[in-house]
Length: 199
Image 1 (tube, rainbow, N blue to C red):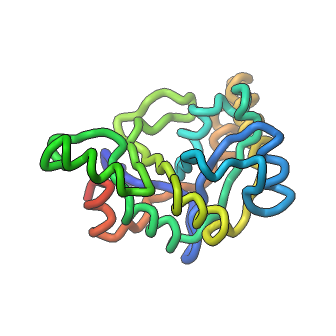
Image 2: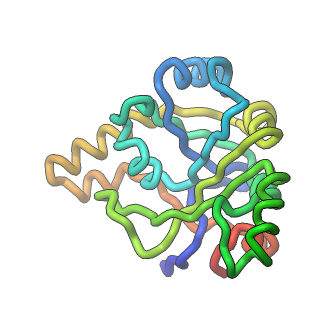
Image 3: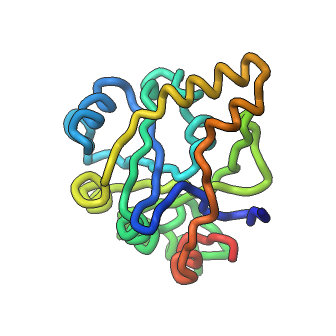
């Protein structure tokens, strides 16, 4: 399947999409017990969600980086995900997409969501020639994420550890079998334009 330079790929159903986050035990365990994020999770901070499992593995070191020991698969509504994308702005100024740096700065001030495209990662966490979307939620978007969008939270740390162990033993084929079956997300044209996805 052809992969576009900027393409959202993920695990999704007709109603939900799965995104990933990694947290220390004191945040992850209460969230798992409650089925949603609760204190000491801080709503006041920007929280980044990632549809790409391997990008999350790159970020958290397979769940071994300090403060990121629990990798969570958070199933959220597609309606919520698309609400966020529709109210997002790029996390950095792009002369091809913004009339001016001032215009971008003004958009940042009023947008509750940031998006950025980072190199997707291979099974060995090396950069690939296409990019994966990260979505940063703040303010109203965090409240909606916690209160309205979250459908289910699963601890996928054991899967992350199993893949790493298989890779270390040289069994790449077995490691690949553990990967979630991600596929291109059917992004409406208007949202693709907002986030700068390839079409």
